[in-house]
Image 1 (cartoon, one colour):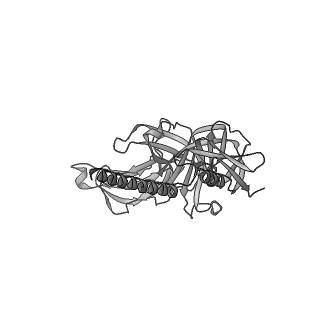
Image 2 (cartoon, one colour):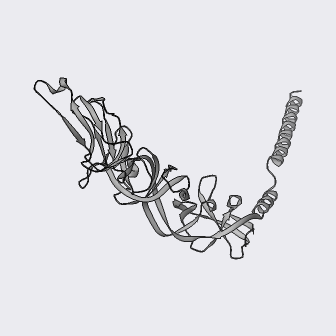
Image 3 (cartoon, helix red, strand yellow):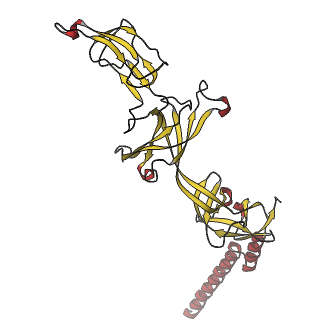
Length: 331
């Protein structure tokens, strides 16, 4: 009796093991196709024709830029020149009997702007005062805040004069970028144009070449920005207060290998590649590259096995694998 129970238990265990094995093999067959099928599928993918456009690796000079934004301001004082603006106030409360200038007028250094007559209260006992107030610089009257017969106070600016031929774009540059900037470096300035002053042929904005005039030796502790002044050449139609975008050339790389930006693709690990085309133009092979400077649509690349004038995929590279059959669309 005991022997029969043991045999019966063994049979049950054997049947369960057989069923478990059958279920495992059925699941395995459904979860992963046979190796032959996998190889066939991989070969099919690799041999899929990808439609592409081709070009060549070129050699050219690229530039690195520091780009910033600022506003047009009068040039600050230097060792050679006084400040390009003068803000005039009176030294005491005074009556303005006559004004000899208007806003927008050009005045010469030493030209009379207005007359003052000292009030009785400010003169004191036995005192007398008054006379002409003249311009300390040559420039344009951009602010006039007095009229004949009014009383001017020392706490209020009454006239501002700016030399519009000596303007700068004052911009802030992050301290870590300022290290690449030095005086005299070439810069390009773009300023939204004033239709009344600009040449209509230039379009809706002013754009001109310039250079770095001054770099502040310190950084603002609150913003970590370094103040940089860019010269505004005369007769550009710029006005104080206008917004400007500045691009400063901070680096130049001559004779570097470049490709269009669209020619560079990245894999799932974010590694950059370009597709080098075979001599018969039937296949493209991915080559690892290291991107460098970028200027416009051109990107500097370095890497093993790439050289100038090599044919590469410039459009459609996103569909490439390591080695892919291609169909070239352009001649």
